[in-house]
Length: 206
Image (cartoon, rainbow, N blue to C red):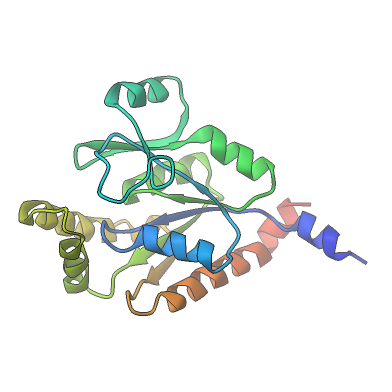
């Protein structure tokens, strides 16, 4: 008979990818997951974009220069990278490997186009698409951030329509209602629990 310790050690650890349109609330959900006590190791994305008001270097993003970012690309220090809205974004590879080797569930927040790249390298990754309730709600969220002009908002809304065409690369879609974050967290927790119980994962972990 397996002890609780044996069961914990045999439970497969996951690489979870959270993505979705700009403004859908990815950072909010990740922060609320931490507050709710959902255990995971969050990989902080590297970016060349300017820091927004209230953002903290090393917590929200690792902010760097274009030159430093291209050096990381050349030295293959990134699991994936993409150029989005004229800025570079990338996922550092070593922290992902280290956390998984330490038997931690890992969560990465990336742009939709980055999901496909991660799936090519690590097909076992669980990709979750966060969706707004409606395009109108997404526009309200982008406008309320206060750091986007009308042209930028229109571009992001146009991009979001293109992103929906790539739903086939995802494993799950979760609608994120701003006034019911607990429901979103519940759905994500259920996905994680279900993935840990999949026969293919539990068999491969032995």
